Image (tube, rainbow, N blue to C red; front, side, top):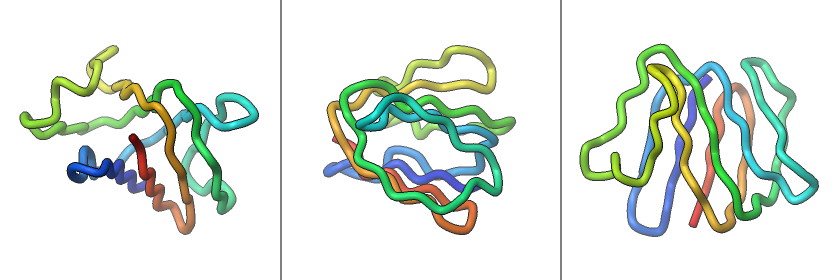
Length: 93
């Protein structure tokens, strides 16, 4: 599935992933390929995502924590998420 993480400054990440976990208003939840459509408010926490060929632009690499070869975390203060047709768009701050 496709993941785009957009901040007020720029698009921090855009690429194919296999799993995304986010801090929702009612707790952390995870999305895998073919997940039902959803819109959610995000609270302070970490966006966690996994994929086989993750590439973070060098200009934004300091914002991400590489947990393993294929897993990254990005701390956020708040945001919104929309998932539709295997495409996740996260507006984060």
